[in-house]
Length: 148
Image (tube, rainbow, N blue to C red; front, side, top):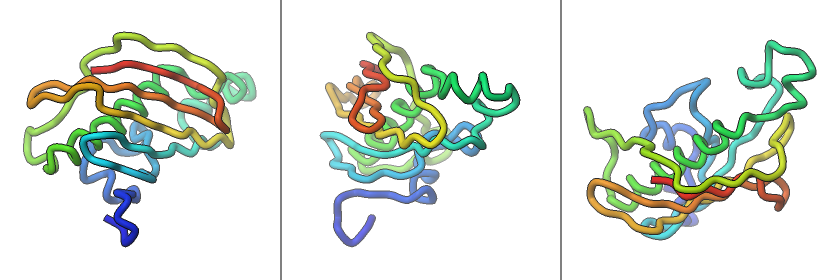
């Protein structure tokens, strides 16, 4: 944890909580984490992303697939869950994305965008959690989702 005690985390600390690695890790930094409440983080979208390369300009213009924006929100919610439960994954202690109750998509997320990720706990039990997630680019909604 950093000196400001706001719960921010760099990529090395994030990787302690998530089993994902490049190219499936979609959280670059946690900017704020208040266990039991909410978490904020970012994903920097670059031209080098595998989901934007290989298909020329058409693919780059189409942007980050909506499914991957939802996955980024799920990943940040997992970090929040571990921080709220004051534990780190050990052995087979993994949390899984179980489902979406509702998802709405707004603006596309493209090359050069910084995706602002926010997740808050709606309800958390020992074996399941429900979260509200929101992803934005420059204050405009890219995705809103309720997930388990």
